[in-house]
Length: 354
Image 1: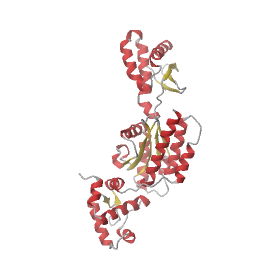
Image 2: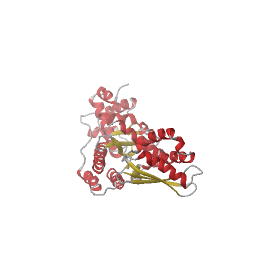
Image 3: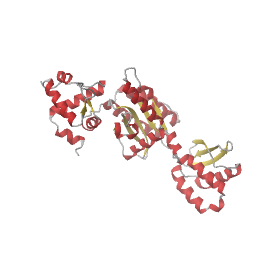
Image 4: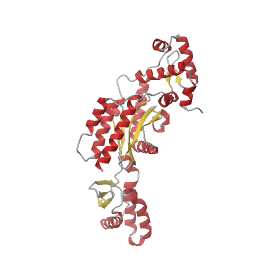
């Protein structure tokens, strides 16, 4: 099967120009593009009938579609992908957009989470879409862990990191826990975890529990496992995703079909853990990636696009991602440099504060 680049190379100049103009016009105003509209601005003198024939050929190839009989054409998902991969002209970051993003991080605050939250809001404001920021896991060595009983079915686990960072979460401990079993579980963990990061923790603890089963009773064993699950399980990913600017996707000019898709998109955005798992696919390589419609199964029903870029720490390791989500009719040429710049800025921010 031909790649988008190969398919474009096989088009003649007229077909390529018709295709490019249809997509650019659609991305600019969202309306189907008719042959008469193209004829007025075409680079060579051609009739509307000639343009119509070219558009029919492009429709036959699956690159354009006609939403209504006798209406103009709009690009299909395959057409958008071909345009993005072969014809998209990415502009420079506009000075006003750069300033708005820069002003967001112009602070001496060490609260990285708060800064990333503001960056998410700024990104959604600049792009008029919904922004996603996947924040990094805290990877400093652990200094101390403690379990605190809050009732018969609730407990608090507290992690103190060597850099002074403190995190705590409420969870449901196994039945039958007592203050003494919680202390025993914490003492067991503290004898093992100092100097280790969360990434190191799970394997080490599993081996130690097996080797030292006699030294820790069943209640403490269960407490250790359930307490660690709070940090290593689903909640960890869910908490690290910041979603801002969903209201930007609603506007008074949206048609009913667009509003229905946006509502579906809002439902998707509520599934933060699924989105975070999807964004982690950006770990496969650096640089901005564009997912259109059903290429992104999470947003396939809403027909949305995601422009996303990973960011790295000082060791050039990918630790998170930033992105913009909106309808497939995004101004990709403008959004791509914004997302790229924001990702680089976040990476520098994280590196400077580590």
